[in-house]
Amino acid sequence: MLSVILPSFNEEDNISNTAAVIGGMLEKNKIEYELIFVDDGSRDASWKAICEEAKKSPNVRGLCFSRNFGKEGAIFAGLKAAKGDCAVVMDCDLQHPPKTVLEMYEKWLNGAEVVEGKKRSRGKESSAYGGLSKLFYKLIKSASGIDMIDTSDFKLLDRKVINALLDLPERITFFRALSGWVGFKTETVWFDVAPRAYGERKWTTKMLLGYAIRNLSSFTGLPLYISTALGLLVILAAVVMWILLLCGVSLGSFNAANAAILFVLGLILETVGILSYYVSRIYEEIKNRPRYIISKTTDDLITPED
Ligand code: UDP
Ligand code: MG
Image (cartoon, rainbow, N blue to C red):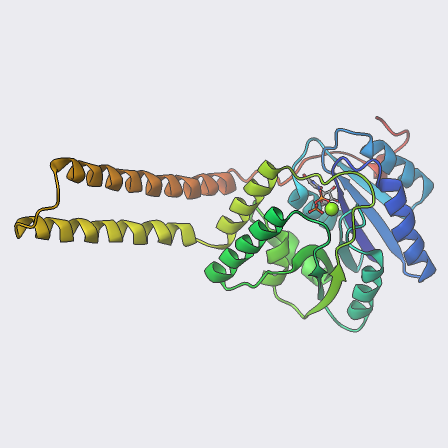
């Protein structure tokens, strides 16, 4: 059986259409399937729509978070709930083309254990967003050696891979990179990002920025090395200035020296800031909190609540 995991945040307009399009396509191709909608704490009528679909079809299931935990939590909850021999993770706004699922499934039948969906074209997005995401992936590549340009969360995973991912102990996950990190026989399919079927994009700039910083730091300690290198440079500069002063070279007024001290202090503060960021990350992991909390599921559905 194929499980299709669909993280959904305020997607009331998309759910029934997406269920019909993907369900219809899989039925037509005689693929046994389940659709798992994970309502990531939506504030609209998404859960009601999911319950309606679950009542209509035994192939549709739903999980509802107690609040918005973010797409990563939704993906992992879906993987945990999946009963399939393999699972596809895809957006529920049909920006990941349904027909690509068939291509992925075909590759899985032929022995692939991870099928990565890569973006051939990125669809409609602002140039600022495109530029920033390029910079983000360049940083990840230079820091960790993992080339993630064109990658997406659109992937098919074999049961073995799902279990390996679910066994990872960390709380702060980065699905897009972890599914490569666990290894296994990987193949690629290319897709063109389609326009959103309904509604607006659900990420705010603040959410995206937080997502980028979290993911960067979960895959690399680079910021730590930068601060160490900067610190060393400053010490070197200070030593050179001191030697020059000792040799009687004029370095301007005392004020300049004061400024230099302030500069060093600033750098120290910056370093401490970076350190505290990592310490806070350790703190987050050590708390061992769940990645998400499920408040209700369609499995125990009698009458849908709003
Ligand atoms: N999403 C989610 N939780 C969030 C934000 C988004 O589950 O906190 C889901 C959303 O419903 C969609 C997918 O993640 O299915 C991608 O989000 P969106 O379409 O807003 O982003 P974009 O495709 O523009 O990158
Ligand atoms: Mg989208």
